[in-house]
Structures are given as C-alpha cells and as structure tokens.
Image 1 (cartoon, one colour):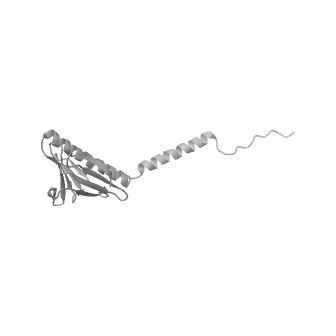
Image 2: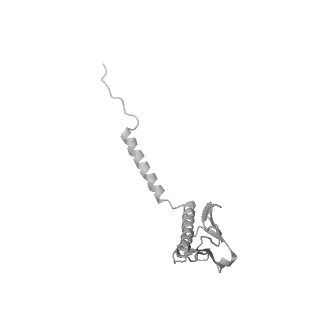
Image 3: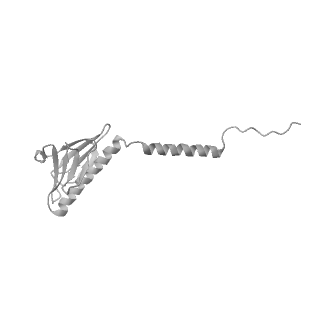
Length: 149
C-alpha cells in the first residue's frame, strides 16, 4: 500500500488574495489623490467663485440700499467686489464678459446691482480646454443662472 500523500497546493489562499487586493486599493486611492485637478474641476471652481461673487454683490446692494458691483479686471485676471474682496481667475480659464458698453472701461468690465434687486445684466462665459460654462445675470431681477455655453 502506498503512503498517503497530501495534495499539492495550487493557487493562492483567501488571505493572500485579500492582502493583494488591499495593497492595490491603497495604491489606486493614493494615485488618484496625487493627480492634479483637471480642466473641468478648475472651470467649475471658477464658475462657483464668480457665481458667489455675483450673489454677494446683489445681496450687498439690497442690504445697504446702495449700488454694488462686481468688477472683472480681465487684464490682471481678477474679480473684485466693492468691499475689497478679490478673486483670481486661473490662467487656464478663458473669460468673456458681455454687458452694456457704459460698464466697460480700460480692460475692466463692471456688473452693477441696484437696491431694488435689478442689475445692469450681463453674460459671463468661461472656457477651459475641453468645456465651457456660462453665467447669465438677468437685468430685471439681478439673479444669476448657470448653464452650459
């Protein structure tokens, strides 16, 4: 009678597989978090910042019962509120502001908001390498609406 032999082990144990999957998962998370922000992320953040600036200026005008505004300094790539707060426009974002000619001076465009809630109105177009967004400021209500360009 032949001696009993143990079957040879082929493949990996469950624990070994779990360890390998854990390492791969950790590497995936680490590589995604180290990746630079994409074009669409920068575009969305810039649109959010401009949208917030417009809403803030409208609220300031209504609260203070005085005209308030947002100035787009396209040459310096800055956005400024009347209270002195400024925001930068990232270099990878192209911005176009359309409003009344009376609100354009030497490379700066100003959107005005009035105490009754109305505004000078305008359109702000933002474009990255692969997408574009637009913010419309209604002249009658002063409200801003975001959408695709």
